[in-house]
Image (cartoon, rainbow, N blue to C red; front, top):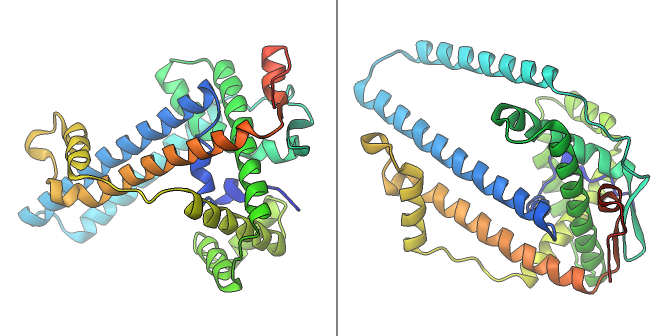
Length: 299
């Protein structure tokens, strides 16, 4: 089966969360980063909601002015992001072995590793450079280990889902493909993205089917996630601390807080499940071997 990992182009599903759930410090750091990003996004969303409410109440500013301001901000942000990307060193893959890891005898190749690592690097490198807390060399080393661990976890889920022989309907596959196509402005852009990633549409369908099988596996193995009012209130207080009267109301922010908490709990359950799969698996992580100078295998 082709394993090009469409995660890098948008077919995330539940497997995307597993990317943060590796078996070691690297995975924990990645999970912490994701949680931090979720909190920041929630806080930004809270501020945006407040700004919108204030505009509606005051009635100030025409829609044309608002649209113009939004377009200008979008352009500035895009230029800033492009400048940051241009200033970053290119990702160094020279020390990545041809076989990144083996999972129960199944190889994960450098070809599969490279696009996922590059995507992760482009996402976090600018943040790391801005914070100054980590050198680019250290960041790349950490991301290589995290990416390898993520791919190992994904391969474990693929093997478990295939062994379970979960049925996925053509209708579900078609719905997943349609959701991917909707991310592009035209069919031409969609076809171009497939070509750039080295995909045919049939390969994309097969990976969509596999991802849906993994979703079925996780739905069966994991417990339903419940979020309490106390947890919602605690996160609300954390998000709105220091905002004073500018903070959105609890009821306004409740849906996004509940969604974030559900995602975090689901991620924790998935990490526990993949840890269980690792206990019975034969795993060799050659990226860790390269960085640590010794063999890193699990039996």
